Length: 141
Image (tube, rainbow, N blue to C red):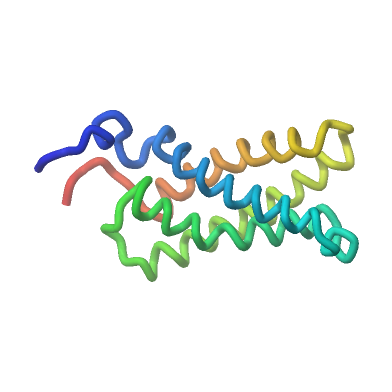
């Protein structure tokens, strides 16, 4: 089977390939977060709720980006979406708690808190998506 240069340089399932797709997903998350933070929603809700809403809104898109770019579409989409939404729900709860903790325990700039929190939870998401949701292996079917 013919392999593309991208597949040779960045094999499916690798952290590097996940990082590229995750960069897109994080950018989408960041845009939603910044928009919500600049509206009346920040006054109505709070930083933690804005984080949680932004995470939830970007998660569905992230599943499809990772399905088609990072991993592959061999598993049934009904199974992968349920698994991915479970991972994202756990990640949303955990990242929201750690975001809130970082906000209250440190005076670091909010965008640094965003970056540190996203990187940590990105590793969690990559590993759980790779091994549990997509059951990814490098073997061709």
